[in-house]
Structures are given as C-alpha cells and as structure tokens.
Length: 328
Image (cartoon, rainbow, N blue to C red; front, side, top):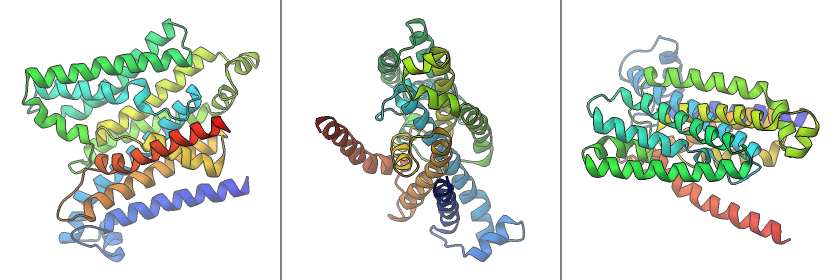
C-alpha cells in the first residue's frame, strides 16, 4: 500500500510538472517567478497576458481532457475485459464527429455550438450503443459489435454531410485532427465539471468494478447485477470521454496507452488504477501538447496527430505482445 501511494504521488507530481512546463514553455518563455506572479494576480505586461489568456486555458484543457480520456479507457477495458478497448469502442469518437459535422453544415458561423454538439454526439452515441446492447443482453461481445456497427453508421453520416455540404469540412477538419489551440476557460469549465462528476461516480463504484473484473459468473455469484452495473459504468465512461472530446476534439490513444502503463506499476485494483490514470492521462496529454507546439516552432502540430504518430506503434506493439502472450 505504501508503494502504491508513493507511485500515485509520483504521477500527481508528474502532472503538476507537466502543467508548469506547459505554462512556461513557448515562443515566449515565461520564467517561474513571472508565472507565479501572473497566477496570483500580481503579474502585468505581455508575459502575464500570455499565461492567463493563452496558456492557462490550454493547459487546463489538456489536464481535464487527458484525465477524462485515461479514466474512461481504464473503465472500458475493465468492464469489457479487453485490454485493446478504448472510448472508440462504444462509439464516442464517431458520434461526436457526426454531430460536429452536422453542426458545421447547419450552423457554420455558430462556433460556440461545436463543443456542445461534440459532447451531445459522443454521449448520445454511447447511450445508443448501451441501449441496443442492453436490449440484446448487454454481453461484452454484444457491446463491442454494436459499437462497431454504429460507429460505421456515424462515419458514413460524416461522409454524407461533407459530400452534400463541402463547406462543413472547414470546421470539421480542425475538430477531427484534435487540438487545443483555440480553447478558452469558458469552454474548459463545463467539460471539467462534467468530467469531475463522472470521475466521482467511477470512484464510488470501484468496489463493483473490482468484482466485475473477476468475470460475469463470479460477479453474479457474489450478488452483483452484472448487466445493470456494466451499463452504469460504461455510461460514466461515456460522460468522461464526451467531456474530453468537447474540449480537445477527436484525440486517440490516451485512453489506450495510459491504463496499460499505470497497470504495470499499480496493478489491477480499481481505485488506485483510476486515480493513477487521471494523473497519468493529464500528464501525457499536457506533455504531448507542449511538445507539439514547441518542437517544430513556428509550426504547430495538432496534438491529435502527434499522439497518433506515437500511439500507433504502441498499439502494434501491444497487439504483438498480446499475441505472443497467448502463444506462450
């Protein structure tokens, strides 16, 4: 227990250091002293303005979105007993993309509606997946197959929208690649609040998540209503992922990579896993976003692209590792 607490403290410290680095680094380097002055309301001039109105919203968005995606991935992997699962499995990205594409087609000037459409599409599509699978028995395989089918439908809907209304691609393309370059605190605040509520719900159900991880038959023998609990936990995961995409767009691999890394150090127990994933996801997305906007300055790579370039090889390694494990 002591070693787990030390590791959790280490991941929290890593997230804090990532946030400080994000606030300081950029085209204009802000020294720690000026950063502290800006955050406490005593700063003035260009540095304070950059910190408060550009980097602080972006860093807060990275922390909130990264934590939400990582915890969502951990819950989905545990509930579905599938180490390759991520929020995409329950239709989050496809649903959000379809809703944003439709929003860009119908109201191209209403930029403020994009995060609302993203959350509604992500959460709504996940609930649709859960409703259909629940009617069919809510088994793990049914959930996965339903998610794949509905994701294909939503992806086709995106193609249809951009074909009929080509101008919709202008607003949708930025959302599709994922990024936090234009995020504001007004956009981060509601998403962070939704994420915090869903995270609290997951933490309250970590005992049930541990029981569910033992397998459906064992969980039923211990008195757990497996189908109902599976739906509740996946709904919370959908809320977390929906909050993340409403801020950061379609970002992949955070919900896949972080739970695997945290499990290596903290094991399978749900409560430390969830807390570790929250800190680890926040740190990973913040570091990747900072690197994406500073390493190739004056050009900025969308963080979604950077994560895909790094996450793709990790996913291939994971697939090969899983295959090798079964052979042995």
